[in-house]
Length: 99
Image (cartoon, helix red, strand yellow):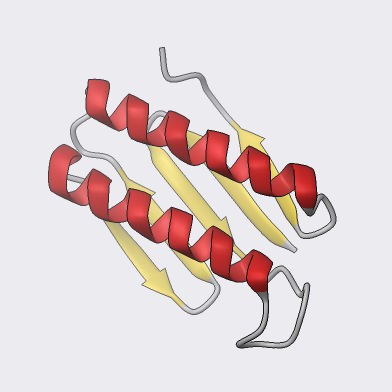
């Protein structure tokens, strides 16, 4: 299962969905594409930094602004859509709001 914790300072994603074998796991791929794209946006527009390795990504936002809030809300929304379809593969813990 993939476990994601998200708050106004960034997010952490860890684990594997185990929906299918490596290389064919559409759930893991969807989560990875979404988290990596948001990470790139946060790095470019919000001076975020992070750590990434297989099955783990952690991002800390150094400049919380409207852009970071929108990117995190977009990440949360996308993850919630994935979770609706694959609830056994993904858990999301939202620690704070972005308002």
